[in-house]
View 1 (cartoon, rainbow over the protein chains, first blue to last red):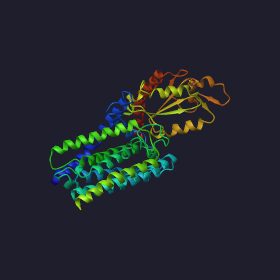
View 2: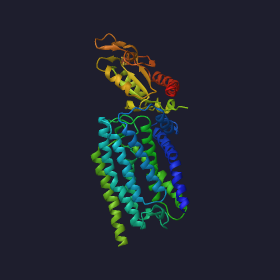
View 3: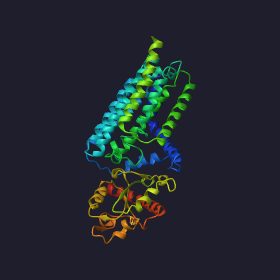
View 4: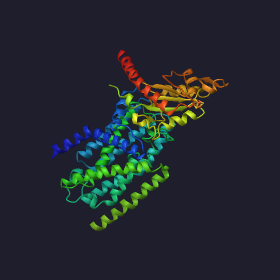
Length: 290
Length: 147
Ligand code: SF4
């Protein structure tokens, strides 16, 4: 069992960038088709990433590179904890630590665009954090453990107890994936009023590492989506993969059909959904258990 | 093998253009012309850009801006002057505040003539610029090895 967990964690480190990079490529292709364009090759994200590592490295502050390396390391660590089957609460905390390094990196230069982007990034973190923590709590209340390794061994998929938590989590995924209408801190698309926000001052390999870290993080988030559907029956793995693909497609659809909102509305919406969906679910769980 | 020619990100700067060329540049990103199929992204950030696409001539106010944008772009980079104004100063050449084309302040690699330059010729210029990247990336590597 222990070796199995180690193998999955190692596979995560090796394969996550390829899988998420490819999903990203299909994302751009599907988005282009939705807009009536041909779109780039599905391998485009890999070309972009390789190019970033080949560009000349200019930086206003050497400390930035260290912060970004730490950001990447902590994201990968969170993923290893998650896919290795450790405590999901630990994963959430480790992700927050990683986010702190991104903030430190973007504030280490004096660009006004970075500063504005950082402010918005903090608001985004504030919008998502309650729901992320509640998801961990939800798994504990439903299954009786924080350990991912034990959560996947239940007889009934956690989604049966946690539909509200699932809705809340999918909602904040739009913020986490930096998709419209919540792509306010930085965006994958051009022409944003804060240029590239948080990543404005990150050049060449720095931006490459941030992209890579985002891919690793997205793998964890999609993994949590899958965790809602897993149980001791191996067939549930298929359900989990289908659920992940459906959620992923939904995000693309939302991205292409909505316009960016202001941060005030984002915060209200995210907390509103968290309180209503996850709160109601929490209450019902308590009543059933009590 | 470098992949820069497969993902040239573009920065569009409007000098003292009449906006005619800029509308044509934006037309390139619409579904009809779709430059993204070549991996081109229109980024607003010089630090992420590979191609500096400039429309309109240089005047005494934007001279410093153009120089700064050019310097903020990491190597390898390609500069494309789009429209007669950016190539030579064009119809505004004789104006008291115009210094001339983009090449009066920064080195220009590709000239795309036309008033306004057609989207087809802009894409042609970008594709020529992409071809230049292979050479530039190799030269950069050689100079890095020499150091
Ligand atoms: S070349 Fe013609 S269309 Fe283009 S900016 Fe100059 S005057 Fe306008």
